[in-house]
Image 1 (cartoon, rainbow, N blue to C red):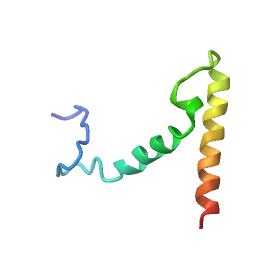
Image 2: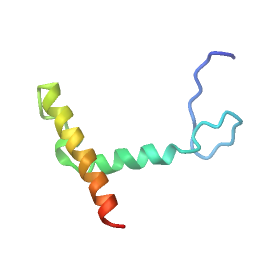
Image 3: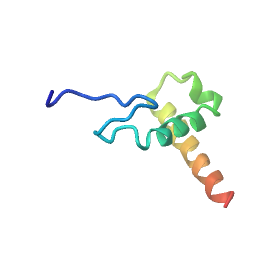
Length: 68
């Protein structure tokens, strides 16, 4: 099974170490879904969508740092 990709499943124990920090990624996506414009991609141009994504990430970081 060498070289075969492994997918981390929730709540299962395995020796590969996959999924140990899975909640971090899921939480990041949940935070990005707060922004309605990122939930559904309305922009046709990729650069505009990427700019809104960067702005959303900056706002999430700013809110997180500001709450401490």
